[in-house]
Length: 351
Image 1 (tube, rainbow, N blue to C red):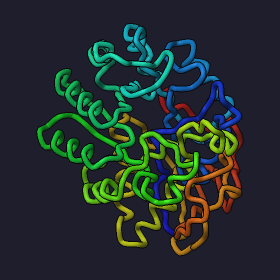
Image 2: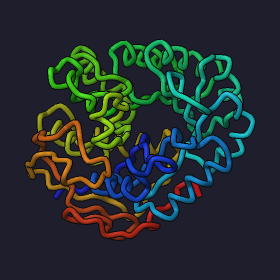
Image 3: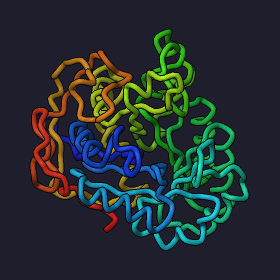
Image 4: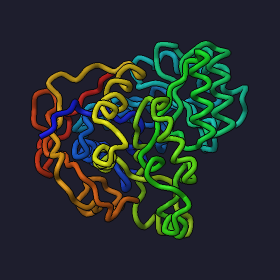
């Protein structure tokens, strides 16, 4: 057995409050443990969104009752909440800013709305940007102007990774993450052009973009799933929502890349444990580790997963490397396909 630290996923959509038919804190944290993830950071674009003290307490209350792995909850930047969010920073995973299309209370469709958040949110707490292409470039400019770190979510394009490399070389305080679906899938495959199940944001890119991500892996700081579950019925509808589940497929895909010689175990630890801990100011989880059967070969099937959504874009993929055991804070939380800790075992790492 290969023994690794428990992984940290800094980008998870738990769907609670408001859309628990897709996922909730119970099912999401079970999926996390099954995937070898012992800490998740939850996104704020729920219904209602997490954008003030009341909604943050709502999300944390649900997490306290249901979570089986450790967690923290982001707050979301909106057009009118820059003054109240600094007081919530210590209770949150950080501030999430949606610089590209979103809706409702988290819509920031004018760069002047970004300015008070960059100026006022405490610099020692993470500021994460959903930004693509030119808005990403604008976000990096803001990082330089306000002299504060920013973390770019789910990069997918060659132009993005090359710009981030250039920014880092000039001392701008920028870090970034990449999702497995942007490393292993392209929008050019015929099967990826015929189904609502391929809808995701950022969209699946070209093989040139995928190759550029692998070629510049040293620039990428974190692996993150952007676990964004929707039901099969929703994905197969006439108006499919964007998003993929990913908590249970992250590590098998990465371990298969190790077996293929494209990745190393040390890089997985760096980008899924050490760097997330540093970027997001997270505590070390004592007496926490996972055990992997490196030689186990199997196919990914949604029917075997704990996520509530019931499907995966990697259905039928052959992978090598299986999570056999997860120990969280000294207690066996998962072993041989079974969750062994109850709801409420997960701890809020910001408390």
